[in-house]
Length: 167
Image (tube, rainbow, N blue to C red; front, side, top):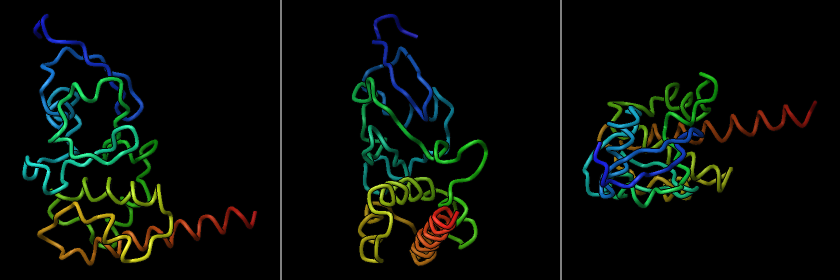
């Protein structure tokens, strides 16, 4: 810890953190090294692959491109924040069931991009799903299993909503 570094305050997955850090340290490195949230992956380190995608103040960002100083007072959600009380998020369940998760490098970013998409458009068509995940690269699945996982989540969400409405 260097006393000349600024104190960076941010909320990650609902938990407040105050850290003395070099202001240009990448948010990706802060998440992985300082906060030990290793779900977010580094793929290219250039903002091209989406493996490091997180939500910052509700927007999807490549954490490898964000200096931590830009995250001052921000709310950050990582893939670890998708699960609730040890219960996997419906997208995480679908990725497991439909084979959307292969080697695991792109999976956290794909999950964050898909959750961002569904938060803004709960019933996207296939073109909108493709567009919503376009910033994320996968070299294992050819995307079909990933798209199938998102489609299955949409169907599951619709079924859950119908069941809630029937009560």
